[in-house]
Image (cartoon, rainbow, N blue to C red; front, side, top):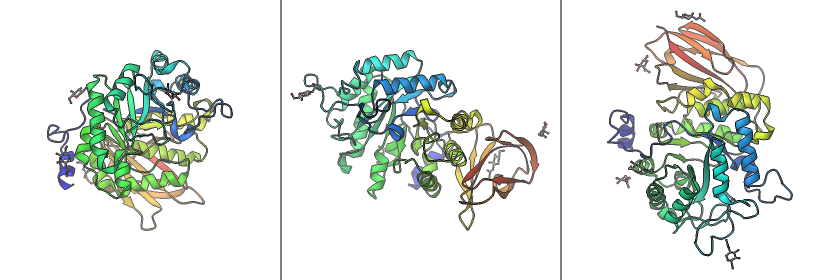
Amino acid sequence: MDLIYLCCLLILSLSDVCRALDNGLALTPPMGWLSWERFACTVDCVVYPDACIGEKLILSQAHALIEKGLDKIGYDYVIIDDCWLADTRDNVTGELVPNPERFPNGMSYLVNVIHKLGVKFGIYGDMGSKTCGGYPGSWGHEQLDADTFAKWGVDYVKLDGCNIKLSDIASSYQLMGRSLNATKRHMVYSCSWPFYVWNAGLKINYTLLMDTCNLWRNYFDIQDSWSSVKRIIMFYAHNQDWMAALSGPGHWNDPDMILVGDFSLSKSQSEVQFGMWAMFSSPLILSVDMNNLADYALQIISNRDVIAVDQDSKGQQARMVYSSPDELWFVFKKELSDSSFAVAVLYLQDFANPHKYELLFNLINKTHSTFSVKDLFDGSVGNYTVGMSLFVNPNGIKLLKLTPLK
Ligand SMILES: *[C@@H]1O[C@H](CO)[C@@H](O)[C@H](O)[C@H]1NC(C)=O
Ligand SMILES: *[C@@H]1O[C@H](CO)[C@@H](O)[C@H](O)[C@H]1NC(C)=O
Ligand SMILES: *[C@@H]1O[C@H](CO)[C@@H](O)[C@H](O)[C@H]1NC(C)=O
Ligand SMILES: *[C@@H]1O[C@H](CO)[C@@H](O)[C@H](O)[C@H]1NC(C)=O
Ligand SMILES: *[C@@H]1O[C@H](CO)[C@@H](O)[C@H](O)[C@H]1NC(C)=O
């Protein structure tokens, strides 16, 4: 582990020593929309005509994403998750086939339409014998499935890890990676394998992981709740010593989808999720009904300053540099490629007023005492020497960009 950590600290200068998957993709964290958290495995189109997993849903979400201009600010992958498949493979060719009722024109057609809209298409599969939802998995069909995805024009493959023996999981994900590469079509490779291995209490070979996948899930699925968001942030904070070292162009930790605009988070909590995902250099994959997006939610996910923090070319994952003894205040720091710093101050108190916090700049960088500061959510700017006072909402965040002046 120490060796890998050291190796990855040196990744920029010694990239041939610490290899990473070299498919030229995901040089900044992928952005887009994914069906799972919001639409899950909804297959009953009679009861849920506008929410069942099918061509109609994917096209209407893609159209709404584009109408809102989100494709123009980076959200360029539309990704379908589990439950798109027919119950069985094609009896003649053995290929995966979409459910014929919900995808009446087949998958090539859908991908084509998505491409004509100017966005890219992502699909879901599973490394095991069946997907988590019980549909055909890729176990034993790796090259055939990779070829099918390539034939359809897929740009992004999210591969889940249900229904496979843990002892086979690493080698199988590698095999699928080689199969995707062999198609010659460049497809982002999103892996779920580290989560399954970690959840079983086993060790993950991170060198192998970085060699194999562009992004990977390492913790439980996000749920539509504030407690889920907090658990994920704390998992990242408490595991930062090894996790932060894995983050960089082409290879990202994935804390799962953005919930902003769904049912559970307040406006402040939504800013916390979006802001912290940007601090962590996380994929920004929305899972929300694009046709029912509140104004505040659109404003948060469209915040170009916050997106720029996420997409910073250095790809550093923020580290927690302070937590108060009462575990209410947390400060995270991320170094940006232009020598400035993104700083997040979190206040995880459940009641009362926006609370005052004195941010002393020596916590951020001891060689600088004067910074120009921009508040990335309210847009205000100012110059400060030594430190600054700020007020943070209960269960809220102040996300700042600090540019050294002296
Ligand atoms: C394959 O054959 C089975 C059994 O005859 C049938 O139930 C199923 O619908 C067929 N699947 C496809 C995708 O053609
Ligand atoms: C396949 O792998 C090679 C070597 O790592 C790389 O140069 C190439 O871009 C990859 N191709 C695709 C389609 O991913
Ligand atoms: C981890 O994977 C790398 C790259 O494939 C390999 O060289 C190394 O031996 C593996 N380490 C362990 C402990 O299995
Ligand atoms: C402080 O910032 C400078 C760049 O402005 C950087 O070179 C230095 O490494 C930073 N020091 C720490 C401890 O972050
Ligand atoms: C901050 O300082 C810079 C450099 O001295 C100056 O150009 C800028 O106008 C100042 N900004 C504010 C908001 O005072």
